[in-house]
Image 1: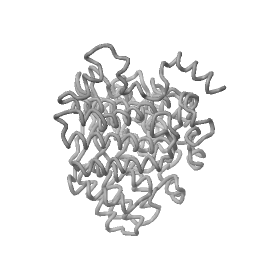
Image 2 (image 1 turned 90 degrees about the vertical axis):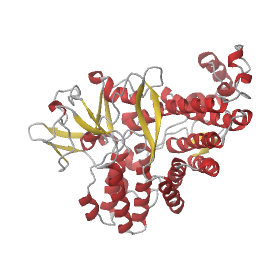
Image 3 (image 1 turned 45 degrees about the horizontal axis):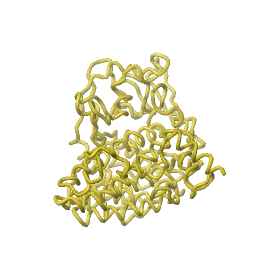
Image 4 (image 1 turned 180 degrees about the vertical axis):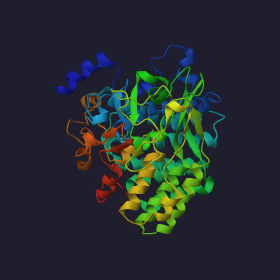
Amino acid sequence: MKKLITFIVAIFIFGCTGDFGDVVDFKEVENPNLSEASVVGQPNSSSIWLTGLERQLALVFQETLTLAELGSDNYVNTQTFFNQFMDGLEIQITDPDMRDTQRDIQRLRELAKFGIAEVGPGDPNYDATTEAEFNYFEGLAYLFSGMYFSALPAEPVGVPVPADQHYQNAIASFDAAIAISAKPEYHLAKARANYYLGNKSEAVNAANNALSLDSSFDRTVMFDESNGPSNTFEDALYERATFDDLQPLPTLDFLDPKYSFLDPNEDAPVHYMKAEEAYLILAEAALSDNDIVAARTNLTALLDLIATREVRNIDDSIEQRSQVDEGSRPDNADIVVNGRPGLVLSRQDGNVDVPSVSGTSLTEADIAAMQDNDAGLTLLYRTRQEVFIAEGIRLTDMGVKLVIDENEILLNENINEGDLGTVAVIPSFIAAVVDDLDAISYDPGTNVASTAIDLNAVLVANKSSDQVVPFE
């Protein structure tokens, strides 16, 4: 009875059955320019469909990026137009952001599968490069399903599939793409899936394969400033200026804002598959093998790569680093954070240099002094946090998972409340410090600031958990 009543209500409210048939269903279309025949079987339709997949990926990142960054310890959401619950990890099935995130990932999957099954084979100009991309995008949908959800259906109104199976599905899709037309990002995507599965040797092999093709590759999600979808996270970090108050930890101040205004047509891209990740995977694997020499070698290569990445010189003086009370957050380069200088920028003294691809406080001296112990692993996770800030990875590193939304629970006969995927996954050691994730202390008179906790140390202290630090 529950399913029947709520199904009728949902049809009137949302106009969607939740089976994603509308993604590729042309039956109700009357406009001859928008019929199935106008797409399937037409010359160059596969390249057009691929453009649509790129656009859908941008929509996925609009959702996953904001939720993941807000839920992590990277930022504190004092005043933005974003989700007001994620900062405290209040993850609810009734939250419309859960619905939108889930649906955008699933739409990416269904669009990619339709491209493989129908659009590509029907296009006389279909080529191997496009076919590989279709498989890559299907793999990305599975990868994001595993990264952000403990379970999610892998087909319309299907049985929820655990995250580990989504990772396996992703690997199969990436292998299909690699077999057709190998690209470094395909190998890296495969490395990431194996990384989160804890498959160390497979992750290392894939990371090495990626770097052998290109040791500095960087694949981005592109955004359209004028026509959309735009990079909404950039809006909060930069363009909305004093309207928003989205602040990074003081330890990450020198990396903010990662995204800033480019021009009226192109919005700042997200660098979501880049060579830096391969080096970090290799370094972490080396540490787990007690091979400090290899770990140092890979981190040195990481530093060399980061030194070549774009650094934008921007005017961020409007920011003023206020949080409710003026001067309540560190805002000048003289400030020492957790005993470390050089992490805070003086934004009132002129333009500041901010890395737009990757940045880190890691130094050659840090690498030389690094040991194969918990302190060394904590340093590596601090580096992961810095390199991947504003890219949606930190929440996954924390072991936190979102929930299947209420509409799916009510409309899908294979899902009931309490099932895997319908309850948020927050590791106990994260739940214990939720109130301190973004907490800082700062006395403007002393130029000394500190974070309430070091979450990287917390992660490493709990490395035996199967929820974090996959290679331990």
